[in-house]
Amino acid sequence: MNNEFEILENLLLADRSVRRFDESHSIERTVLDKIIGLVRLCASGRNLQPLRYYIVTKDSEKEALFPALAWAGYYKDWDGPSKGERPSAYIVQCLDTELADDCLCDDGLQLQAITLGATACGLSCCIIKAFNPKVVTESVNLPDRYRPRYVVAIGQAAENISIVDLPDNGDYRYYRDEDDTQCVPKRPVESIIIN
Image (tube, rainbow, N blue to C red):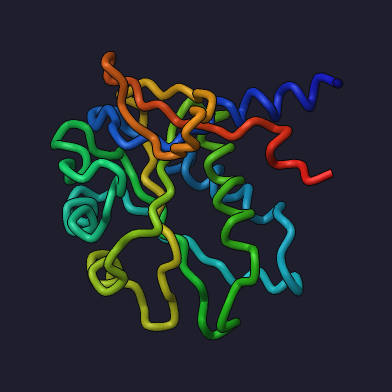
């Protein structure tokens, strides 16, 4: 394999869903703008490019947004990161409904570009789909034309994450081990290739 493949593979290995951050670590707005700028380079269904982004860095907006988010469905006794472990910023991905009723596959392509860009900058993310859209909209005062699709938490990781082999019992749920490392089971490549 060539060097570019290894670079991409290493970025993907490092690009994990982080749920506990070093809240004292700030992120320059120019870094967030540059990361979001990567989405312009992504493929877009019909080349319509209907997604827009709202960057949340103000403390008041972060405080208002946080209760709208569900953090880890498999951790039933955990309500999300504590004060001091919350993200430095959020990026709210929105569909511009004046351009389209759906975004086809653009949302996933652009989210991966954002998380890979953040990883390349030494940051970590958590893509959140489980949220209260009304509270998200109100917390950042989104105009009616923008419908939130995902919220990306972004900051400096304050936890360790490890990819592990899928166990024989097939349990794919992430978990924290005895060292408090978040373990993420992944299927072997031979199980995802059909032929």
